[in-house]
Image 1: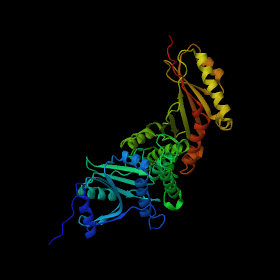
Image 2: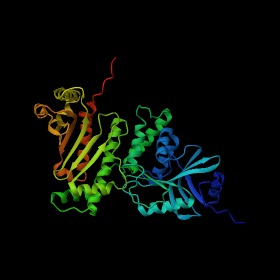
Image 3: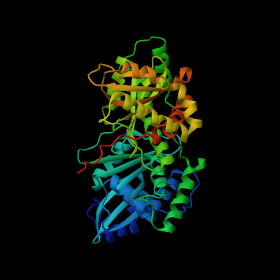
Image 4: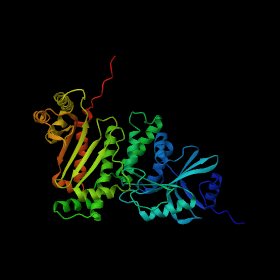
Length: 439
């Protein structure tokens, strides 16, 4: 009598799945919160991560929502999975099964990397082909690499139209967990699950886990900065230029997560797509600048970031809407009082930023904004006389000089800059709101 051969995972009875395991046609391990593996091993990291999803409801819900995985039914979390009837050489790092009425209805495959290991295009395509064979339509890669959205991948892997490929950085997953510990509407309700989340994050935060944040721009960043300084013509096909743009996209995402952990709310970076790298490469070639955007819920506005490669400066700006029922002088007085209040609330930080602070008046029908130092309100009053101010921009402009081209110092400086700008200025500003009409 010939034993039954395994073919498809989706649609398979779970009892048949267990029979295939018993016969050795499928090999897998149950995810454990405390795995019997070496600390820092990718297998240990996979097991702990999948167990945290299993044990912490709010964490599970947030991740399942991103990968569009069903929560209806019994869910199983497996590691080191091999389908011997399909491919004996492909071992899947992680697998989540969703079983409803005894049938496997949905599943997602995980490919994990830690330390300096990058997601490999050929390996991803190999697992995509395996997924196709077993009927699974979702795969998620996890590594220390950053992407601006989980629907994007750090590699340009070929995938069928009906196949979903996701990517998470370990820093993003840590941030999601940390945000659940803050006192807000989405925090973890169960006290025991709170303690489990803390223990998992303690492990993730340890240098021995193999998780590290974005701490160095790619080699192409410095090469691009040097080429612009030396007036060497740039080409859109330059590898160094592509690496420079990728570095900025990753650092922008890292800044958003860094600020998220400080504020207790998820800060969003620029919403990018598969063409964003090409678009920004062309932008550097044309104008030697790059842009970014950080969106903080309920703040006065998004933080607009501009990198100027020619003069090696970084500027951050927020927009403030003044009272529209008042004249120009009253509007300038109004924004002046807001800045005075910000200085009183955090004088130490404000004083360190003051020399680099600028104020822009967005004047109606004017080609350019009127920009003056934060101390030059008399000049602003004179230059805007008889004109209508629509909005103000508060700008922090910092000269990075030689550090602009440093792969490490650039990150340290810009992350320090965004924290000081937010704590000293942004969090103390507010837009004018139209009052309710009165009888």
